[in-house]
Amino acid sequence: MTPIVEIQNLTKKFKRRTAVDNVNLDIEQGEIFGLVGPNGAGKTTTIRMLVTLLEPDDGEITVGGHSVHDDPQEVRRLVGFMPDSFGVYGDMTVQEYLDFFAACYAIPSAQRGGLIRDLFDLVDIGHRRDDMVDTLSTGLKQRLGIARVLIHDPSVLVLDEPASGLDPRARIEIRELLMEIARLGKTILFSSHILADVAELCSRVGIMEMGKVVAVGTLDQLNQSLVPHRLLHIKLLDTAPLAEAQAALVHMPGVTAVRVQENGRADWLALEVEFNGDDAAMQALLTSLIQRGLPVVHFSEDMKNLEEVFMRATKGIVS
Image (cartoon, rainbow, N blue to C red; front, top):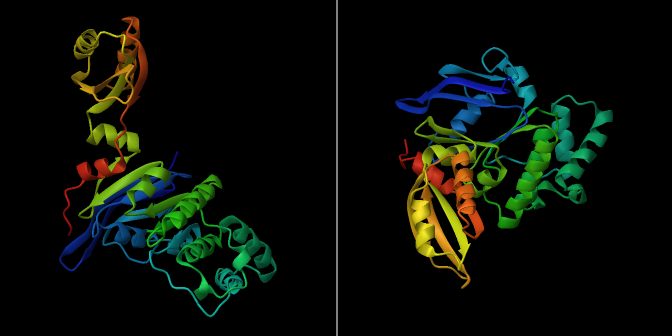
């Protein structure tokens, strides 16, 4: 499958500072891709070149096969962009605001009413259609902004910090809205410093630092490459001989350490196992325990979160 967004050898400098340094990145049709990194990592600069607001110094970006250099108008047709801080026309009603942008995209007036009603249903702000835009809360303005970027039916949504400044409920609601939009077949690229949102939403993640992409992949792939030692939690009925269980585990392939853990249940023995094998080796370990007659009642992997992956991938350097 050909990626819908292809970024090749992308570079942008501001005077002596290299904001984006030879970035290569592909984004597949229909995926939700998260771009994370510390402040000054180059995320916003990369996004602005993608949506044709900045001209790259070197390299190429194509969206749906169209170059930002050679065919910027077609790229703009395919992309809907919401910056981290976008202005709204406060002296318009919500209905007038969307109608204005529909007119900017040359959507015939006869089609605008039905289109806007559909967008109201999608982002759930129809009950505020006659309210002035400047009376909306931050969360509702974000919903209105998403409706605006969808007005011309783009294939790719590019959102710079869409959850910035939102309260916890509004963040959850925006997450759910983005997942619904992805189910409609849209490709979503968004940057965020809220790692929990990225982990919850994204099929893949790119981590940037000092203008470079230092890691990219699914969360599982990043876990395996950046946090190679897996941590297994194994619980046995207390009828199991502890020494035998520990001795069996220590000699199994991939096991590097075994520790006895405090356990909330008196009838269970809890073990923590450091393991460097793959999924097949982990399955073989569980099979071996059962074949030895050990009464396994719980077997799980401690999944590293994106914060740990982020800390391993970056060095805390700001350009």
